Length: 543
Image (cartoon, rainbow, N blue to C red; front, side, top):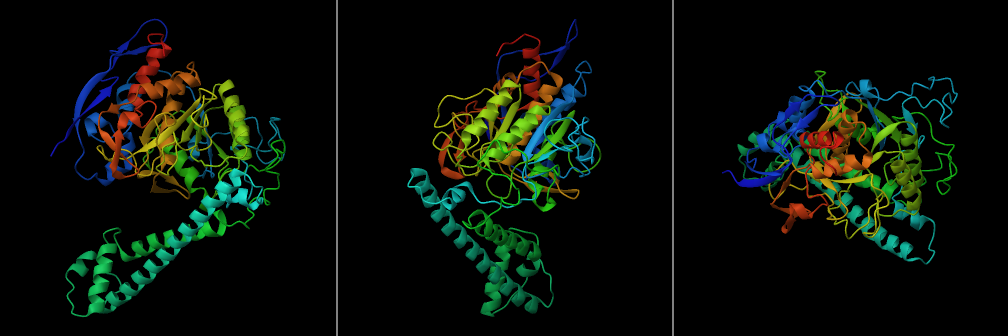
């Protein structure tokens, strides 16, 4: 059954006007209302791997019309001349040797590799592809655990941190125990079924044909039938459960461990912003911990049309890896210095797929954001994955606190879309906010690069932000005279909107109109953004 919905779009077709000066992609400027149908069938593997680049009108999948933009604009209108744009990826590290990334990695041409000299006098020795502000560190406490570790100072901040710690520690311990119990049950049921079926591996179909009057076998069959609805094999089920156990164990051992010291190995004073002589030039770090950053980098700019892997959103981009984010909460000092590093070394777009809810030195980061604004650099930031209304909750970094005045005009906050158009359009985990989330972009089951020439599906607003960073990079590549604040407004104004109500936090009983869950009320759309950018750049529209 097709469910008709309406959308407001700023563009439908393109016509090239050739004349003196830069070309213009002329479109009727008024907003058009179109009808389309909801995608009711399951996406194929190829569609799912590529859904963020799909077009809502033609594919009925709420992607960013990336393919449409390349086909109708970038690959067609030869008068558009791109320039190279550097995108700073502030993250856990990037596998710069990955087959789909190695040709799009930024190289500092003013630095001679391996001579242990700061050739360009920028304060960083041998920073050929970026900088690693974490050194050899991988794990860290959460920020509120660090607050507790400093001792009770009687402040409201300490009391709030203590209450959150106690709640989170208890929840994490219960989850770890629950996963361990599930593993025991699955292991026991698997052993019973192997013996009953007479083979070590079996399928859901094998179980459906199994008949027995033995109560243990009946219970094992029911349990494993349910488990195999979540994965394709028993081994995959066990791997998923083990992943859960490892995750919660890591939370307890590192993130929530008040006695854990993950910073001393770095060798700096994280409470002193003037102490800047630390870190190293290993922008990958431990590859096991570089998955997140490698995935983010691939979403932005994995080499397009090279016959392997996947296509990033943007061509004509160089990825600058700035290792900033550990397993745990990032330090305000590292974030502030990483922003300044990226700005000073040529980045015009910075992606920040990280965040936290406590920020003892937020003023350091705000100063860095304002510094980026003064140098015309756009910062694209993930909204967070706690299903929270950010108009009621502060997440850091941000460009305002408690719904106050924004400190700059170069900070764009991104929530995550699901690939299902309809009530579930917003990812169940995504934060939202009429004032404090600017736009939404694809963030559920995003297929992209991971270390050692691998590719995986990951999800989160961490994936939505780099989708938008790729859009921003393309605008800055083709229209380099546009300012960061203009690029932000173009992305916000050119997106698609819809009149449907969407579930918040995956709760079907809590809904809002899609237009009320972000400042723009829009889904980012590359095709429309390029058209609007052209109009702004040519003076036909003023923002």
